[in-house]
Image (cartoon, rainbow, N blue to C red; front, top):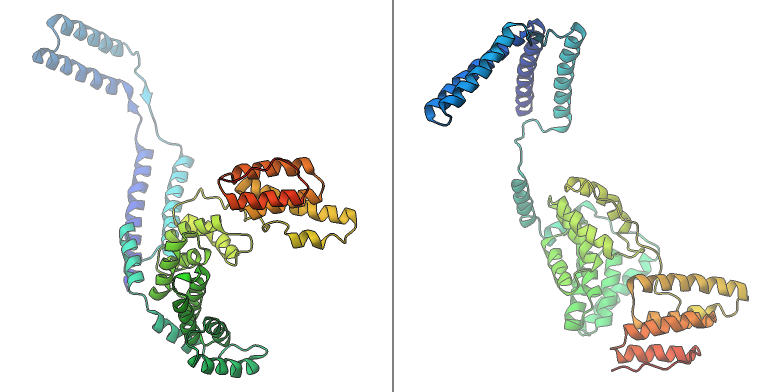
Length: 423
């Protein structure tokens, strides 16, 4: 009923606009051309009146007033002689009147169609502040972890099936029993958490992972917290609950660039009505992601649409992060020693080019610089190796351990130069 009322109201307004515009077009077609002499005469009369007012106010003198009167009177006489007495305007041609009426009809019908299809009949406009307030309320009142786990379990009553499940279940049961007598066994609880998750025992997996973090205390790596976050979201059917948000906040306090935490932060904002915040968070996540990040395809697909929703129409999706790791390791270089010289050179060249470009653009730890020096030594490119060595020594001039590593690798590569010692 509300939708019908809104649509009828729009129709009445549109009809009223159509009548007014149509009447104006038709009336314009019947008007005779305006007489230019009459218009000009009215202007000159107004000018004469204004001269008298200025004289009365004292802004001009009698001589100036007389001069202005004479000039205006001269122009009036010119009009009487026929100068400038011409008609301006005139009735519009018939075809143009029909085009105008047709345009009015198209605009009104088109706006009505757009309103019905894209608008929300029956709903009032929602200002930005109100939308943000509603989103904040949705975030504040969203279901907790226990409720979402219960919902997800009810919607998915069957545990995941996989090969070897029948053998794994009794082993996990034995591990549970064993840990009752070994409550400080971090490795055991870590193994239990992983396998409970695999069996679909999400609550048991979360409890085991929380035990791991509790036992490790301050030594718990961020990856342990990220795993707990992942478990909580999966157990809630993909929903980011307040409890999961608490884990996110803990991770981001320690590392604002943590990928898992940034990804689920964006998901949380999207679920509570703030796609603009999702855009900001995932834009940052894209900047810090590597080419093999599991969320990369999803956020790259979502960012252009999120940009439009967020009022960023000029946003251009940046190129995907370049593939490539830390460069050739000692094992990589040893693995190609048995190849024929040409194949060996081609493989090492590719690894060296990738590592060199990355260090030149973004820098890297001393281990990566040492690997590049070692690789250039294998390729017998001594001049390049020496240049990289000198650059590395400048970069790590204040770090004794890093310099020791770089100098050691340079010596192994046969680069006999004066070593730069640390502080």
